[in-house]
Length: 440
Image 1 (cartoon, helix red, strand yellow):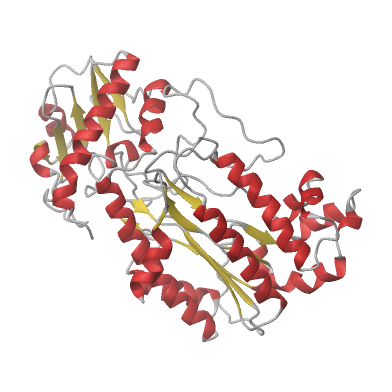
Image 2 (image 1 turned 180 degrees about the horizontal axis):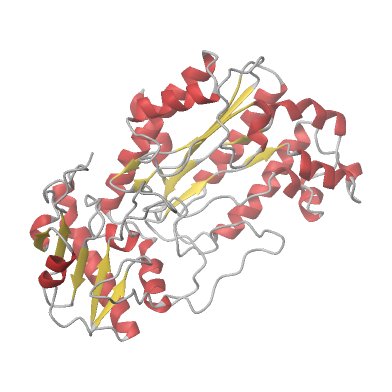
């Protein structure tokens, strides 16, 4: 991993600059940002997995504890109230350590009373940014939309420190993907593949950035399949895995699809792979992501035409909306502290207007023009989803499809291939492909 001690100071300075700008735009004097509080299951004493408020975690990626507070005021050293409760039932948060410690006035506290005493005495000028339920001195979070929008707008631009964490998350994810592919080739069940993935990543379910999608055969036609059958399949035909890893809260998001043997489905996977790599190569500053999405539809329709699924030209398939039956989601999204990172539609810093999605493409998650150091996913897919196919077959465009070809592909479910790509003003940095290459 890159030298985090060396990279954090510039990261901290950039966050200060962004916070001060957002506060100036919104007329805010001071911020109080909460990590969040522990939530328990309804009518139970079992805690839900805790994930810090991303507005807090961007400042302190190595702090993973509830009931912490960050007080920020321009011109002053930020105060961090770090909660280590008096608790012998659970493992306590580790003592504060890491490259961030010298940049904060750190107060280790045991309870809410000590936390309040460590914060500035007059909190009336502070705006509280925290999840619901994370109160301070009886005060609920404010979370003004325009202030949050201003912070989100610039969060899309990754600092060198954040990129270092995301490269490590990509390397961990790639290593685990290799293990998952080997488990698939060995005939493991979906559950067995999932276990092998976690073992290779050395991350449990609660550590992963999202629930793994481990789909064999027809299950790959369910876009967010989380079934994890325990029994091996009688005949293994295809394997789609959409799984990532985390590094101090920063995510990787990687998808691969494999055919069990050579043949028409393997050729279709190769076709989608070519489209995906072509699109990745076009990721650079100044590109309209919406146009990339539309280009993706055009290229995937060409792949389906070459595979004998479509009877019409690619252009006509897109114009008639037929391509959406086989590619019913968006090309990708921003990624960082959140897998589906926020701020993807904002036309301005304060979020007063959004950049519209192309007509007929409601599931696209990013419409902004790409800027240097955005990290985006590129994840084209081709699926054979019975519900959507039935709708197409019952509609006016049924004759555009060779239904015998569809029947041959139905048992394979579908294909998705996804990389995380950093935007530059020249050739893009493909974090995912670089990670696989580093493994050899």
